[in-house]
Image (cartoon, rainbow, N blue to C red; front, side, top):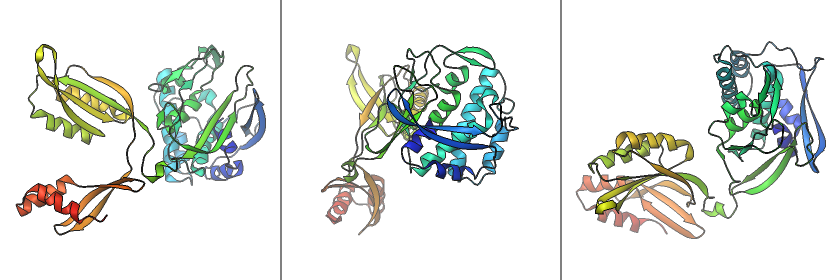
Amino acid sequence: MCIGAIVDAGVPLEEIESELRAIPLKGYSLRQKKVKRSGFSATKVDVVLKEEGGRMKSPVKTFRDIREIIQTSRLSRQIRQKGLDVFRLLFEAEAKVHGKTLNTVHLHELGALDCIVDIIGTIIGLSLHGVERVFASPVNVGSGFVTTEHGILPVPAPAAAEILKNVPVYSSDMPYELATPTGVAILKGLTSAFGDIPCMEFESIGIGAGSRDFKNRPNVLRIFIGSTPSAMGKGLSCGERVSVIETNIDDMNPQIYESVMEKLFEAGALDVYLTNIIMKKGRPGITLSALCEEDRRECLCAIILKETSSIGLRFYEAERRTLQREILELKTDYGKVRVKISGLGDMLKASPEYEDCKKIAGKLKIPLRDVLAKILASMPG
């Protein structure tokens, strides 16, 4: 479905096949056809094995086998690394649910050859589209049971459920497996964030078809390929989701805050700030707030709990929009000074780097405010 959607969005299947020849594997071909799924016109892409009797008997079964094939291929370094990341997710999940290790678990019913083509072909297709970041909606896992070599298992299958940890999922009333281990490994391994469609302008849309044709809803995967809206390109970024972490503290030496803030910034915080508050019984206190991307939240929470007297945190999701900015070096009477430049349309904002100005003031033994004023006055525009 992934490759089908990518092809439907405009990448010729022949180009993906050509890139796949960089992998030393034979015995398969790719076939595409137009189909309908509940009224949707979609592209169906199949991996056709050249041996009869269904799946091909392949000596490639372990993670060590896959890693050797990918690393010795002529694929680009970036595609090789992304492919290995996805396969590691897949094998680690299979190993955990079967009580084995990464190097002893086998692919079994996943099918080594078509699994490689599915994963690497998807990564190649996204690269050919020029995709830099991938966002995905919450995953519908389906419901009911699925028949495997290990017997009848509940949906989602154990390996798929393991991979889907920390991914937003839901279950519809469709009595089918809608999220396979390979599919969710591709999704989790390549996706930057899950949630709503980000602020973007659609350039192409692709619809990839699944094998079944459901009566009540289309069994398809849609891909929207686009870029930052042109209006945003003039200086304003698209809205992005961030996590806000907060804790109220009234029993800690204030000198500790500086060290905590430094550690939070080093760990990837986008912003850290302190707010004076009045707590119960009139006690003065401080709200420590930290902004971060979602994947840094747990790390920052751990730092706050370890480095402060806090015994509890709260966090929530927020959206923010920022002016695009860049750091330039400006030649001044004091030497080179870094300046942060941001703007929106004809509006331009500039701010000298505080630490640079502080060093100049200390070295020349002049007031910091004089240094800041003179640098701002010397800036063009």
